Length: 226
Image (cartoon, rainbow, N blue to C red; front, side, top):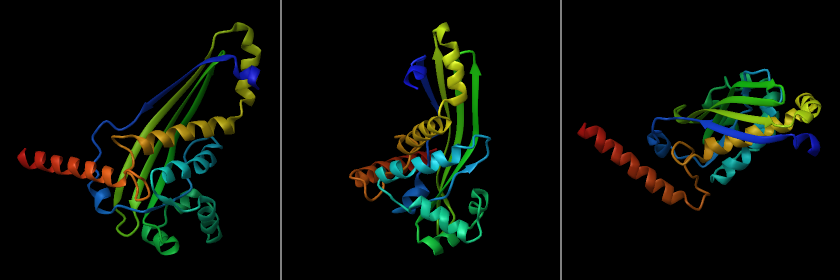
């Protein structure tokens, strides 16, 4: 596999996210300590996508300072209570989820696009994901992020054609999906301008709160003056 992977000499990542300033007013007013992550809703034909995101979302959320409910347990409990699919789980009212799990917020992830194209010995993958963080008690959206990740792999050796073709067929699709999920979650949650606020467990929690509050007051003053 190392020999096959060696055919590919270039990896390019392009992140396209929000361009408008994120309004953190509701987020600051309902600052959560815990997040319940529902299994991602996969609207694509990439069968590994949902599992990949499910396995990579806990760590970046925890590193952002939040308590994250064990996702395998959440998935199992909801299935045992008559909700076998992510689509059905996403339809449950937030307040009902709060009564069952006692979480402050629920995070909805929707995988909207996953396309891979192979051209000779090069390939490119485009993934579009939407994230929504919703307050359990009020049902109010606290944070929203929509992004597209593009990943390209290119080969320069004609002698590698056969190996590259084999790679396209058996290139550990699950691992590739997981790699893209890691990148997507990191760029969504950790984006300094549009990402999550630092949670109570993060060492920069108070610093981040002061900065965001100052931005909020500045924007309010600007709106009042305009």
